[in-house]
Image (cartoon, rainbow, N blue to C red):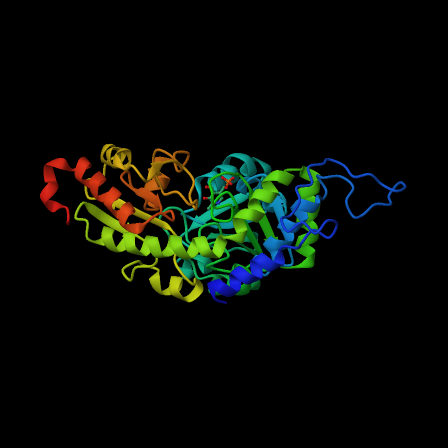
Length: 393
Ligand SMILES: Cc1ncc(COP(=O)(O)O)c(C=O)c1O
């Protein structure tokens, strides 16, 4: 499907309000709904269980991800937490080693004490998945691309292994977004999102999503969502619907900007490793081309002078790239994972998955690419002032 066709599909999957004809989805800011008689109502009785604004969003999420049903949560971590509640004590998860720090923290510091064991492997190598999966593995947990080294795992191949072991394949699709990759069509059972990122797209909400493939999984997640209550409120649901309306357009611009910046960074002599799945030298470029339609806006790189101090100096020099956690918004951001997003991962584990002291992550926004490149150029100059001659013009 082209970006233009996806635009049409999204915009026209959002219904006109049947009651009033409002073209924008009304915000049903209500906790409860008046019933004609006890138990007789219009399909809504209490907003934790169901809310008309959230329902439009949840249906849209299911459509976008080719799922059976969608569920909106108060944050990406609340969405992940709901999926983890499908497990029982003694179950195991096989997870990608370069996982988002907050997922690692939730697995380790909350779920391990309830008897859930997590084994981390480099899932870009399919033999690691085959070797590490056991009859106790109930979920294979993949992020692709990963955060922040942008590893790509082969979802079709992993899904075949998951099926053999009757394990669920869970895909955190935050980094690609459904505009670039649809994991259910590649064999995933459940998709989760930090909708805070590309789906929202404007750095103005915290939200999460779960999309399920089958009726059975939908019923289980619906039960957990209602029983534990970490739902997304009506106003944030509306903001998320509004963000999704422009998702394909934004992602197209994010991706073309990122390609231009990655090409510039390839020539910068201070850079050691450059991570962007859209460039041929990326170790997973081929599989990225196979399962994604473009490569998104996240670029990471490490410095030849691999120190926290140098990275800190560089990220402090950019003017358009603002220092902030998060990603996927229209404004460009720069982040130093060792001191920010991945601070909760022990140094040893962090380095083992390639997050060096100097690793810097860019979330490329939708500004003019030349302005963004010029901003990086002046930041490199200001950081490595004594070695100016090494900077390409
Ligand atoms: C890949 C990924 N998954 C999940 C999350 C958690 O989402 P949230 O911050 O919305 O709770 C994040 C947050 O950065 C993330 O990057």
